[in-house]
Image (cartoon, rainbow, N blue to C red; front, side, top):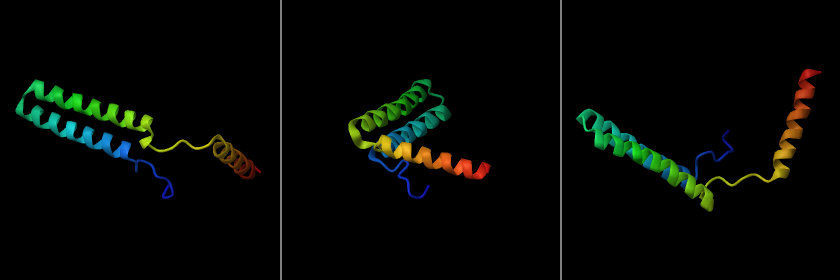
Length: 86
């Protein structure tokens, strides 16, 4: 897993930071007993997901692998499973 860039993109960082801020806001307003502030924090959490998804669609997320790479990986996995079964 060290070779992958899982989550190391501007889209992932931005979405996670916005959601974390929303979590903190919701937690503070839960303790303060303010339902409006709590739901505003929950809205920020959802906003983080929307912003992260929009940034990914705009090309700032992890690029998709070419179909040739996916097929080659599947063929290699099939060969390995046949070797293990034998």
